[in-house]
Length: 363
Figure (cartoon, rainbow, N blue to C red):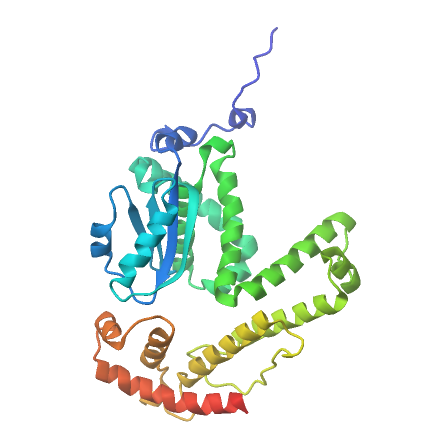
């Protein structure tokens, strides 16, 4: 009795049928909207651009997208036009008294627009991979809870990551989409830490953790401080200094939330003579951020029904967005639906408390 020929489909060989979304097999669906190369210009600005006007003025065949969460604009054009597009963006913004920040031209960026896929296919694919991704991210639960504590917000964030993976997935590489998505999810969770904690601290900590994992896999035990330093090609003093400064920054960032009362915790700072300049810069920014948050926290001596007994959210938003967010009070007034006078009242309360906090820090 002859045996059936082995199946060429890996999924069938594992006893699992290929995934089908909206009546289209997964691999065939991506082929309907193949990934294409383009040149891209990334940039931020010191004030929000009028997107409709910007889009109208763009050269033919050039597209723009705006990531509101990151405040990042992306302009896409044909291959070979990166530098021309970068010069055009600078000139257009300068003509409207708008400064570009971190403008960067990138060549041969391979992307697809998720909207180019059949709607039923994309919807079914996202519905399938959302619970799969949430389960995959359980190993990163502590990090995710720190940055995205609300379950609904986490579901939205993971959905956005799935769409981002759809846009970057290259079906010609021979890697299944599920495997590509799993790899990217780990990377994007790390990016949350980089955005919130600063690249220097997050990257230093990540390198240490990777070295520990590699040593553990090789020797089946955790390395000593001396072994870890040798494994990373560093001196013990450098390893110890990096570990201490990263731990200090992580402690600083968790000092207080806006809805908590001012605490009496002693703030430990890195030694300026030992810590790298990048770490000291991040520490100074963290202290300033903490001082602003503390200045907007409820007064513990005030009753809850008094204004001073409530978090000064409007004062915090006014200070933060006008100081670091590139917004004017007039813009914020329209966005928040309140008067500039009301914003000034809340901002003045912050200023009084902030002056005292900064004086304490200077001492």
